[in-house]
Length: 267
Image (cartoon, rainbow, N blue to C red; front, top):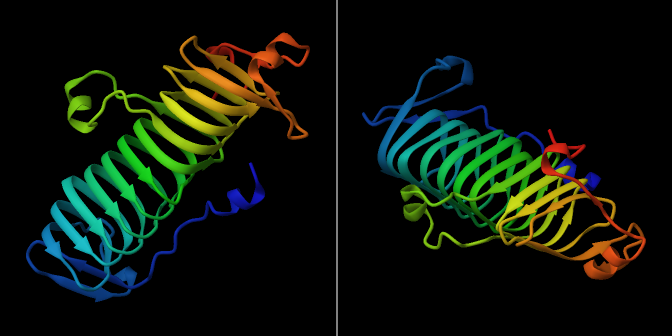
């Protein structure tokens, strides 16, 4: 992983000024220490023309704002639309979040649909079930994704897990096409374990591919576990030379293979 990529994983900036809107029409503004840290703002349906700064907000209906900053954003079967950047400490809950700018948080634990026109940054672990579309890429400490993800690049300091939703009723309602593959052009991580993944390049020490995954290039020295339905097209040597997978297997430059449970870098 490049040094430049790691430098992006920084805590998002959160303003000191706090503006809160509740279902009862209450507004408050003042220094952070004036607010009870356990105070929660309830939002049913609101469209704001000014940026929204929250301490902790539970959205129960629809929220539309030009910008959202602050602490914890809890989505309870709601729809949140942010026309600009969304910078909060935590995103959790279930529903739909649409961000036209960039999204940044310290913790992500969400079920549903997230669509971001910019980059998604999570300085902690990102846990997601459903659909994640990050047009500007995803930077996270670690990723546990269950569902479908689309992004130009994914950079994680630790492990990346991309799993499928399965065949349950919830999966039918969440994904238009249950057989849809995750598409990520480039992945950099310590360990990658993926099912139904289409990817151009993976840079990792341990790579496990299952369920019709298709990856163009992986490092020649990586520890690999690939099922019969998945394939790797090329192995990349340290000097950048690409070896066709079939030729590498038949020559002395054979990559290291390992079972998932015995992978030396599996955490």
